[in-house]
Amino acid sequence: MLESRAMLVVMGAHATAEDVERVCKKIEELGFKAHPMPGASRTAIGLTGNPGPVEPGFFENMPGVAELIEVTHPYKLVSREIRPENTKIKVGEVVIGGENVVVMAGPCAVETEEQTLRIAEKVRARGAHIYRGGAFKPRTSPYSFQGLGLKGLKILARARDYTGLPIVTEAIDAESLEMVAQYADIIQIGARNMQNFSLLRAAGKARKPVLLKRGMSATLDDFLLAAEYIMSEGNYEVILCERGIRTFTDHTRNTLDLSIVPAVKRISHLPILVDPSHGTGKRHKVGPMSRAAIAVGADGLIIEVHDEPENALSDGPQALLPEMFEELMEEIHMLAPVVKRSMSRPREKAIR
Ligand code: PEP
Ligand code: MN
Image 1 (cartoon, rainbow, N blue to C red):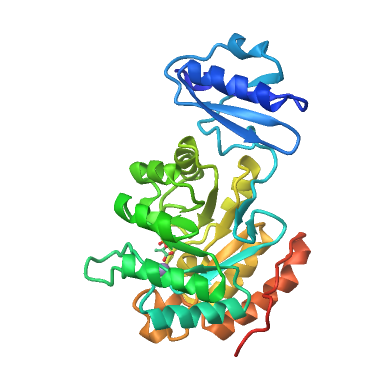
Image 2 (cartoon, rainbow, N blue to C red; image 1 turned 120 degrees about the horizontal axis):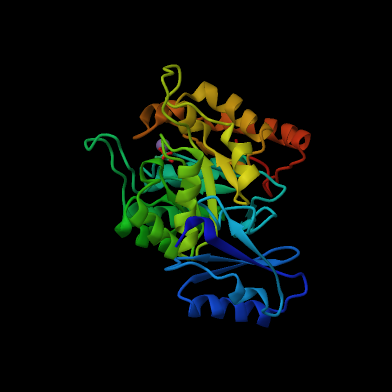
């Protein structure tokens, strides 16, 4: 298959469900995989897994077909060509990629049940929409705390029952992915696994949204193609996340590349969040970079918060204290309208 002959079948505004179904069937008969993407005004159908060239004539005269678009760049399903409007991903009552900016917050790692429930309540009371915490930790050193594993997932499920907040947590391999998909509301794929293609494919087969973090040395194309791997397996609920890349700077842990936000928005319909915690590695830089992320158009933030960061088993120096998180949330409430966004408030007042 010549990459340049990759096709999108764009259906007309009046195409019926049967017309879409007929085209999908034809695509499958030809040995391709069909990806129907319903949009506000029309449905586009992507073709992947093509064993040979696509003949436009196969589709051109089928009922409901408006046009065939040749896709010249390497990604198809992540592109605005297949879906011009922004993708909105619903997790419980939270919508990611809509007008409201979404904040995921919590500790780097699930350490104990008491710590997890305590911090969950603190971030919930201060307006976090989704609770984060790692049960499987991909640590640079094999001697560092590796996470509580399945026990950690069970603690996170208890934190969800306790606070009502959906859970995002990381899967580091095929084995943990199966467990994470069972317990979490969003599966996180970390920076170190962004090009673990078998893991991306497995996440594409899961029926839960995926938070895909940018690899430390990934270009925009690498990043979008990693998302394409997940989508090519039929999971279209991918949330991108910029978390900083490796450069020569030594005043931060990573260099938070905020310019990727408008770059992604131009090409892709997928939502993108920013992680200023790993992006800077230092508590006092998290607030300013969070504000900047919202200003450049990020759909939300993922922030590490700990109430005893000096005792944290991982990433203590970059964790915001609950009161710093509260202040940041207030700032985002003020800032969001300037960039035509807003943020929902917690139902009850914060407990101090
Ligand atoms: C994390 O979220 O704690 C984490 C390990 O993130 P990253 O994959 O971006 O390093
Ligand atoms: Mn961390």
